[in-house]
Length: 555
Image (cartoon, rainbow, N blue to C red; front, side, top):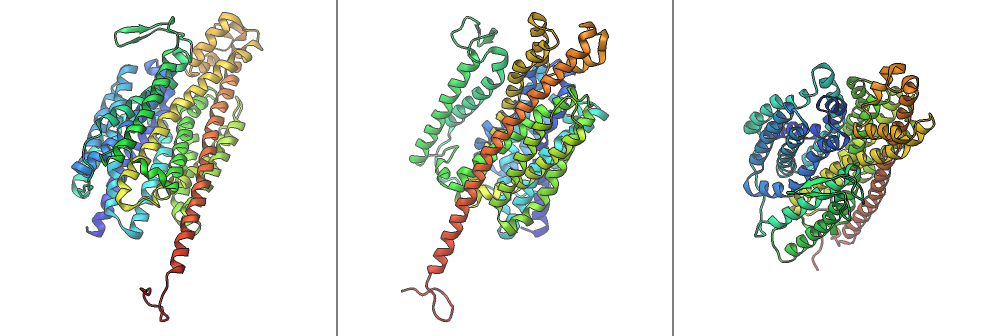
């Protein structure tokens, strides 16, 4: 393939990747405006953030295999087209149902695009060029995810929140046109027979039920049912022995277990499987995927809860919140650009470890700093530290995870790693929102009681704050002594803001805990990579050579 055309193809693939990665985070900063406009509750907001990633993750492995069979460029172009269609539906949504459904459609498009980009890069580039191309791919993943909140703030403030979706239309059309002109068609070799339909159903059902349970637990009850829920023609009532979310999580765990068992059985008998479990015998691959998943969980938990805090507690507008989060994007872009050079000197696994350490420090300091009176500039600095770590870790994770994977399995390994990241994104939004809601229920009554508000009045205010994700706080602040609680209104608004700050801090500590798990995983990856390198060096040193330094002797 012509050298210039190869790099032009990479630019097109990076542009397509940018669209779908941006959409994972651009919505977060606009959520306060969307909640106010469409009257979403916190559960709706979590679905808007999570469903995209759930559908994305559920279909990634399947679409990766379809790309190998029918052509990666074809699926890439189809994916961008479906993604643009979902964006149009989202832009003109008039309620929660339409917006959530459009996010599912966008997730289908994203699942078509992502494995096609990575597999095409893998098939197109060789040697040193491949390392550069993977670096670009990783930098786009980290940088675009980080810049999403800033772009969301700009579009929501200067135009309208609907433009965070409408902007995808001209960009998507341009990517499709450039893809037809520049991206080569490629296919993978598929030796194993059969289509793993049952694997798709088990994985999609299991993962979907797990996320459903995490998101709906706050509104339907974690164990004892607290509300009725219509389900397939009947009602899961409050007299049921267990809540629907608890049942969903239990069934989801069973289905995921059955999926893993089914995939192992298909692999054992040489049948085509969505998930190649033999890959997890490779230490760097297994632990590297753990690290990637933990990074994604923390990132998307942070992107969900921090904008709500900035707008509803600190009183920033959407643009102001976007600018604070832009510090994270700046750090990610800066370190992502340096990551390849740092990795050339110290090795990719060590760069990932350094990045995770910075992420843990950035999130921990941010959690400590949060209060009703915190300066936005201070948060910008702490988020910049987190962004520096995110750029370093994400840019080198792909090459680290795939380093010891045999070339013949690289396509399956790439799809698996992408799936793990998307699962982390879906669970990150669900876990972040759940942690925020649970902590609000625990902390707000205590803060309100300090100002003499207890009983039904306090419960109603707590429920409203949780339901509307804190969007009632600015209204109480603006009303002042003329609010519905009279002279106590400013004090109660301050109590709600203090409680929301503590709840946000709790959610960030949970994100930091996931990052700490990722940091441990990266240390194991680094140790195993060092052992692999030492083993290879030992084999090379023991290879006998002739005295002239020529080829190894063959005795």
